[in-house]
Length: 183
Ligand SMILES: CC(C)(COP(=O)(O)OP(=O)(O)OC[C@H]1O[C@@H](n2cnc3c(N)ncnc32)[C@H](O)[C@@H]1OP(=O)(O)O)[C@@H](O)C(=O)NCCC(=O)NCCS
Image 1 (cartoon, rainbow, N blue to C red):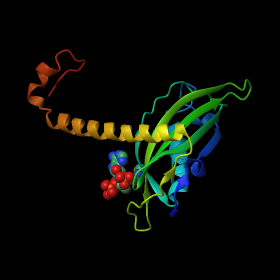
Image 2: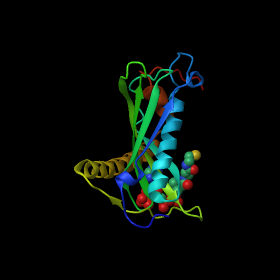
Image 3: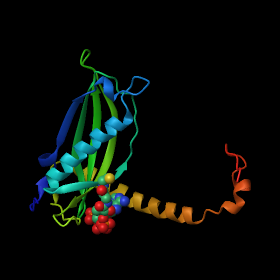
């Protein structure tokens, strides 16, 4: 385990991979699942480098595929630790695809992976503090803190909303929805 505080740049990681035909879906574009798998890989590499331990993925936020990725493009995934808690880390990932012939680079998606460091006993272990060396890093740290607060509030509201669902009034409640109840 890394004990002393580490700067963001210590664990910044980039993975570049060529999009081969076997990654494509029936429409000829790259499967979203391939990109998610690569994102998980780079998040792991970045988080475990900072933590100095094995890490697990706990949650993934904001996955939006803004533009399709084509076979033959070079996809680069850039990962940075944006925030550290006691045992968790938020890794921000930016995905870009480059057309090798034209050199044009497009931003295909950005996402945030929350990872938790695990010790030898498989329990969450404390991660090093994060050294923020510029305003952008400070901004990202604060943004992550705010997102964490919002997520916790939304999780509570969702649990509350789920506990209040009663199927007895469903016919009335769903009358303008595109479903047919055939119980
Ligand atoms: C994630 C895991 C370690 C949490 O275990 P736990 O006993 O609940 O641990 P804690 O309550 O101490 O939480 C540990 C950290 O995880 C964070 N955490 C827990 N659940 C979370 C969630 N749903 N979203 C974001 N962070 C979460 C906590 O905030 C805490 O962070 P902090 O120490 O920085 O404050 C445990 O649920 C686990 O191992 N899950 C499986 C993960 C895995 O296998 N992933 C691979 C996908 S198959």
